Length: 393
Figure 1: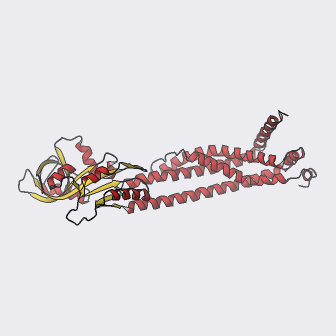
Figure 2: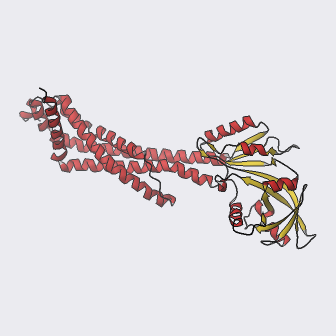
Figure 3: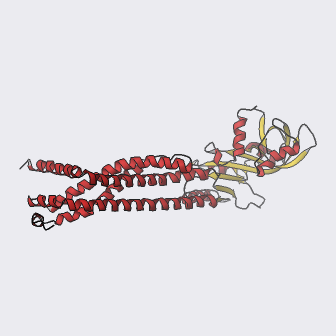
């Protein structure tokens, strides 16, 4: 009696092997259908998962998505305290936050080589956090900062192309900047043409702008590049609003909402496509299993005639379906993730990163599809041995 359970398990394993290898042609078709379904579903799921990261990266390239400004910008005290910039966190639950503070004012610019030749200009003092500065300041300023690391140390400010042309300035020329505070003499770096307001502005460090404009410890606005969905960004704004009631934050909704809408549409489309693929795979498996069920009636009749129970027979076929789903899922999911990387390269120009969470999900879905597709085998549990042996079926 003690050897009976082990004998039963041994016989069960032999029967499973027999089922898997007795009709290799039809089971190969089932395995091929499951592998193909797993490959396509894994590719779509991996693209869907990677799309969120890809869209977030692409939209952050457009610049900041939050602007903090004075609550009453037209009042006499239309500036913010620099302490607000210092107290903005460097990360939230979605990732690292980029931030930059700006101070704007009107100054007179004079070419030191031609005294008396001067023009009015907007000076922009700025400072930024070291995290993702490219997201909160313009590409021209990034270029200026990169070049200033290699040029002479006396290069203290950047001048827009149109403003430089009006004064006949070139790289390295000296200018005099006069505002409401202490005048300053600087050598310049001429920015490339942008076609925007930067062409008529002069850029200096925030401390220097505060000295020139006699606005110590003040900024005009703060730009933030905060990761996350619109709800997470709004939560950050609510925290800052509570801490600084004199300031107001404006999420740039054309970016945050567009990002959410595009991802929602892409996610919905890929989810629907994955569901359709899995349904079609289940139908293909079901069609193949219907033929297999017809061929196994005599085998089932024999098993029941020698004492096999309906539950045991169903467990046998269920195990077969799970094994087919597992094998097809393991093979297909690996191929699908590789396929998604190739599709990402073709569509986005950058290969999609493999997401490990996609692999077990795809394998699990394939196993479920295999179990559902094996539904026709359920009818074999109702086969009567006498009917089979009399040749009535």
